[in-house]
Length: 406
Image (cartoon, rainbow, N blue to C red; front, top):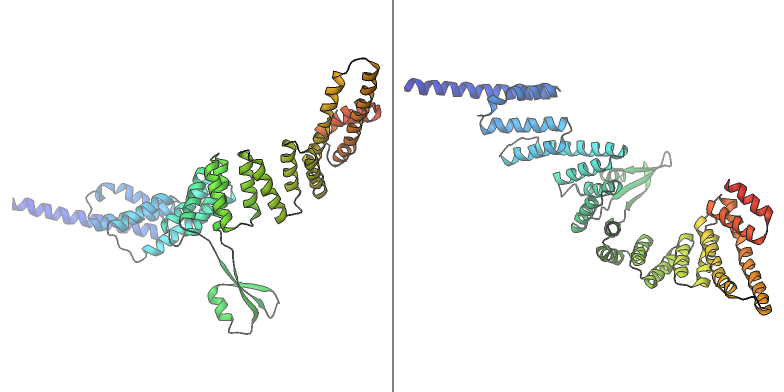
């Protein structure tokens, strides 16, 4: 019995020595840059490590985390680093290793974004934020942006709501001064900035603070809810955003678009006029007001807005086409009356009057369509003008338009 105990004790010492020897060899291989060699050694020695003590197991987990990091298996690496810490593992370079992991993840995400792999970039940036939620908030912001680029609105909404909950502002400060020697503006770190202030090499020292990103975040939440068809939450979000930035043109337009979706045209028109007050030379705003007034039967107001839109944006095809469509609406009532007339002398006289009125409407549209066709060979404009020329008996104009269509 005593002999068995001694043998077991010797075997235990031998096994323990073997475990320590193998883990040291694997660590040495990894440190020398042989990642695959370290991986192979751990795999071939798996049976040896099954009964390893906590200290050896922690060394193994820590090394596996580094291997995963080197192989860009970032999520697995972070999980193993956490397991190492949770099981009582201690390493003086642990915090620096996590910082290195964060840098590796962010650099990989930058590559993904450059190659338009936006979903992968978003996932990595969110992981970088998760590693240290107190210092890595910027990565959560960039994760949300990448998710929008990936059209993954559920993920982007999740990230933007997290940013809103932590009141993220993303305010940064630039430290700049002008070089006396070159006269060019130079940007410094805060430490350099304070150091060079004491010299005569630079002048015009100043600090530039960026605006808060919080209004943009809340605006994006509203836009995403609208994209997902959740008008109620979208409206709540945009109203909250406008409280923090009531003059923001994009926010005004976002709220206006929501009212259009809700068929609240009165409120839409109010907001569009508010937007025009902010940006009076924006032809698109006048065009939108023209559309709403046309839908509401306010032909005179709609025409004014369309004409103003074209004045500000002479290349707007929609502006010309909508204006022509609005003018041609006047033909409907004339045609209905023409069709209701009989064959009496009075009716025939009235028919001729209406025919002239109808031709005047067509003639009014001709220069508008010609101007549009001069800018762009818009097929709808060409086809409409061809029909008008045909009705007016302008054979030359008709054949010219027909030629353009062909």
